[in-house]
Length: 476
Image (cartoon, rainbow, N blue to C red; front, top):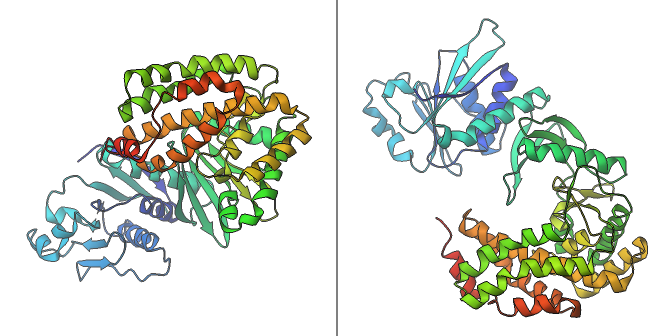
């Protein structure tokens, strides 16, 4: 038997939470072997998992004790087998399980009646002295089944938090390792944040700092810092990005409100303990552009040499154009997907664990020169005007700093998009490259950025041909 990955002990609620959590992680070709004595909870677990996959808590899921196999039309299909009455292991082929194994999810009770099952996850159910308690141990290859082990850890956390009875649905993931799940029960909901301790610790600290200053952030219902798990308030799905896509007329007033909020954020000294994002640090970060983009498009030696000079040029320009402004708290990854319009019409903030101390214009650049969407120029102008009016910053010093910060961000993002494709097999971000490049061209058009503009002019643009060249290097 493979190594034990995790053992959970608890009541029926924990078993139900485990079934719902594991259901979110299964894919075609996964086989789960449900092992244990009669009455240990194998069929109960299978029933909960199938209902979760079908997203129907009332689905009739009969035990296949007599039929041996029951299949369900899902994506991918689900096969539930009970082999207790299997007469001959060779009957596995006749039941269709062998053919179904590659493109379906298999749940197999009494699996040992059919011999060995390679490359599977075994869940061993056991009785305990307390009849209300159950024990489940997961056995399998760590690399192959790490996602299911993590699901089991989420189930234990949710159970301890009092949300074991909630339905679970995958909500979102991003370019990082963070993942989010929505828990629904009795008309209420919460969001389960799945990350690591290094990310959760600053998230909780920034949540408290922002809340103390009256900004709208999710309440934290429960958190396990070492495990990187938190249960937080669900702000809903009304992202500003979705609102402006559905109702374009609302874009200007929403971005003016965002600008005013950022001006208020800039009125406070930086939050304690956050990293300083100064000129040298910005230069270091933008190095990812030279490291990944020119080589990926096959740029010549002159273009690579120009790209290598971007970082020191940005450091020098930052010292010239940004040094006069005291650093403030920046939420850093600040754009329309990370701002929610709450049911009571507040601007709810998400994804601020990477906050830094930097120039007051940084988040406004992130919002208005968004790599994912084009913001109309009149909307940009009105938002900047509102920010300046509330913050009191002078236009003549703000504009060149805004342009420099935008160029630094978007050059860095070009490097990140390239790396996400080639290293992480995430090519979808390449579609944003032409817009990102057009923003860079606007930004380096400011007269104060002439040294940077001369360097960028020597680097090939992300034409469709160059984008496809990067895409061809994406691992399958």
